[in-house]
Image (cartoon, rainbow over all chains, first blue to last red; front, side, top):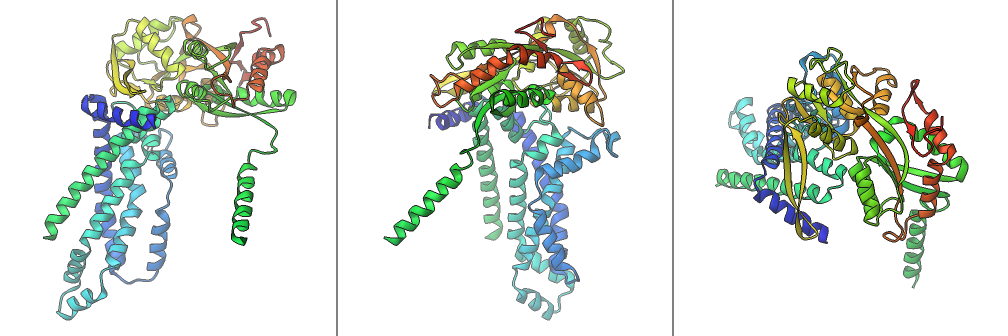
Length: 231
Length: 301
């Protein structure tokens, strides 16, 4: 119990002291997660929408593959990307390994299936009658797609939030591709892993509490934004 | 009534099943050690021999020295095998360990890229080499994980007269405020990478960035000659007494943690400093190079 209390107090002290290192770690976490969520949404939402909206052969197979990719371990993504971008890899000359760009690449691969699969589920759950009504009213395919997209938009936003949650909390890709360099590629999760390695558990949990607080604030913001559009 | 019987049988068999993991497997000793000990491969020679002599199996948890000592403090393991003499002595003084046995030492080397951009090569003087690297702002990768290697690196920067930034952080421990601090040269994230990872990862990071780093010789030899892909880094500085790295083994004190297997832990410590253990350590070669020097019998071949 004392341990938890210590951790909570430490989290408050850390936040309150405006420790520049802590804020930099938070900044790197948010920046990398933001870009990987943005890129994977720009790719994953259209992919998911196209798959869900159209009927084609092998559609079920595509969905099954996407769904199984949800279980993709971060370490596997890390290893595969690592093999490509390390100095010995075919993209080695780009000098990408242990940079924030490398982390974004790995994280996009990690959550692209998640965004796509959840978008498919979101679009799939829209009642068939919307499509039929739109078509009967003489809407073109594009217009019908717009109607469906409008109906599915909250579920799609939820997909993006889920993806953001997955990347800001993941540690495998960030550690393997970012390398946990302080003041450069250290994120909240790799910092926590490090504190564990050092035996500084209190600080590790304190960082975890900070991470949860940030994730909570972001979700509140999203909620407010959604409430506005709804009314 | 039948239901109670059923529940009892199920729960008893469940307990037996779960407990079975630890039943009937003979003597098992838990040891926390540093990643460098594990990475060097020395344990792969020592532990099977120890088992042959005593029948005791050792489960190894490799981590940074800080975490390994923490395991001892928390009573998670029966024995620790680390290399940070000051902290080991404090561990014993605080009553967490019974006694520190000086086992062996190896040495650190400064490694770096072949083309040596800082011009640090060709001297035995470790401090001079460190100063040159800092002056040239050539890349340097630091363990940054509070490990024994990290402590020595910080001490070397200080002794080399490189201006350091002291970083302190406030946390709460046992209800009162405490501070954590560590030193690093200016230029964090520009030329000085503090990555908070084990020795092997640090070497790979340094190779990737073609930067310098401080490493124990054992891990370096293992990565350089023990892997198909080798390691694209050269030894820049070696042989300075300041790069000396002593290892100690300490059984966890049963007065703090009555459940620890102190007898077996003591047996292991004494076996390590016996002529047999010391001989094995002296004979251990990593790709043709001696990596560890026995301390209990310096004369052991």
